[in-house]
Image 1: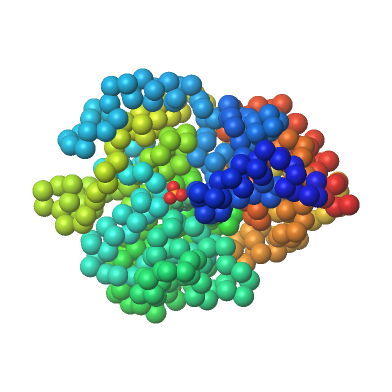
Image 2: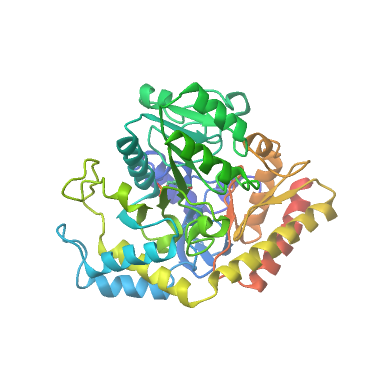
Length: 436
Ligand SMILES: Cc1ncc(COP(=O)(O)O)c(C=O)c1O
């Protein structure tokens, strides 16, 4: 596949037409792929492009899809609810109460929860809450992490090698003061975190971290790292925020905190909580959550016209109830391990150094030498050109993984052993072709 625009002429034509009305033709910055692709249908583990070609999908809408595309338990419940109610904008519904109750039941550090509509909203609210609670301004985040699109965290995400560890805002138009208020640390490096706290004594309101570094991707917390962060935050009076927008519900009903045993003060949830429908949540201790001005005395603003709309709430309830009743996590963890082992064997057979990173249902085949991924610098060893060629060859063989450097892939409940076998066969072939 060389002339990428001709892979799906219908997709290219649609994107071209779209560009007249939508800047660049897409509604989110990372949706333009090479080859250009648009999809018409998604069901279970599969997507169909505009030419009607079928793909096994591991992009999973950046991880939002956990049960499979258009899962009937979710879509039917949403459709039924919509006939009665969409949004009232006053009071609360039974379903909203039930959803908050379920989050509190499952997420160990949660005593209360509020919902909004996207992961970025959730991290925005969590950080502002931490500022309100502590009376401090500054935030610590990690190099290579994505915690949403707002000014306090959109820096040092997928930094170019010469920007790592330096001031690296992710957009024009960001408020300089917000960028300056955020300190960036190296993942798995407690000494670097101590350095940040020494640099800004008594000034750090929140430390926000993806408890598994999936946005880099594939960086796991080393033993003691998350515990060390908890201890530093306790000592410094800083709120520890686990950004579980990816890990929440995908790795278990209780999120990664239930697996690692380290309890944050605040948790942000999104993506897999509702299998593709828009909803997110901020959860945490009652003493903190009651600072939101949803209470009579709260002084931290929490608002949003669409918060608690029936579509997101019912989708989340349907997803959580499905996860409670079916061994989804066992299934996706098993297939994830099979996939990673299979991909490493394929790299070995091909004589190329590879590292199949990821955790649970997530995987990413990186082309690199050397030991485990500890921090973002390690991820930069990936051979981006080979990675891109390999992913494009995969697409030509009916397996969709996002063809952008370091794009992570996700297994859903709808994937089967046969899908993994077929994908590994395609991967073997695709790697051979990419190496030619
Ligand atoms: C860890 C993490 N936090 C926050 C966000 C922002 O979520 P959203 O895109 O729903 O605003 C993302 C999105 O990829 C994410 O991966």
